[in-house]
Amino acid sequence: MSIRIGVVGAGYWGPNIIRNFYQIPTCEMAMCCDMDEKRLAHMKTLYPKVETTTDYDSMVNNPSIDAIAVCTHVSAHHPLAKKALEAGKHVLIEKPMTAKVSEAEELVALAKANGKVLMVDHTFEYTAGVNKTKEVIESGLLGDVLYVHCSRLNLGIFQRDINVVWDLAPHDLSIILYATGLKPKTIRTVGMKLMHPKVEDAAFVTLKCANGASAVIHVSWVDPLKIRKVSVVGTKQMLVYDDLDPLSKIQIHDKAVDNPPHYDTFGEFLCSYRYGDINMPRLKEAEPLSVMCRHFLECIETGATPRSDGESGLRMVKLLAASDASLAANGMEIEVNF
Image (cartoon, rainbow, N blue to C red; front, side, top):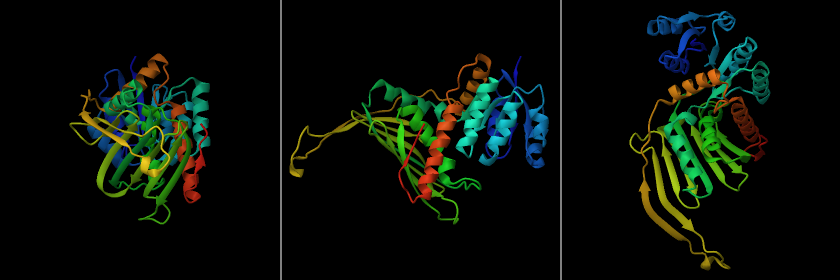
């Protein structure tokens, strides 16, 4: 039998999830819930067979619905997902999983107790570019990872219930955790409130990792250019992942800096720079959301643990909470405990 999906939230992200589930023949995109009748009417024109409702309880208590995707504002993630898990549904949640660590911990425990799949939409873990980055790093081609720099900049979209770190940084944090294998020990965040006195709309996040490597993430809602770029510096080579480059998303640079083995004075400190070729591997592209949705269905069918499971979502919320603590302490370095 086909897995029957319900989606709550038909605003910004929900329609993308609905479209992808609707296009997968092994499942049935069955119901859509939203408080806005106009949004529901629009979904009905696009997908006439999808049932629409403003009553979430009617969807979550429908015995024919097997799984629910939560695509709402972050503050609503926990109560909606909790109700779905308690009703025996598998749950997919838009990132970040919850607004509080305690909420994420409760959802992880609920999913485990009820034997249900809990998965977080860390979309970039399902992109060809990030998976090629992971493959290259794990092959040893770059050597040991020394430093990662991420830029995720744009003009908007301003959020009403979270700051720019909670909105944009989860993408880069998930890339760092998934693709590089780095394990953050501390986090330090400096933010700016340029448009609104209570919400950071630009920020710099610095991670120090267990192996001595560092990562810096720059996120902004107030930049004139749209940038989605990750640079990975290794002891042997370097890699650049540019998600907006249609022709060469991944560039592997045969570049490195070789330090002298010993020096006593600054005058003796002469670095050797190596400049080699640039390799641009071919990527087998597929829509990441489609890959993610299919993976969710596969995990329901087989009982496999999702790539971006509840534990992964919990780690992300812990990092974001520590980032908030750093912001509140004027950029103080905060220890991260996974």
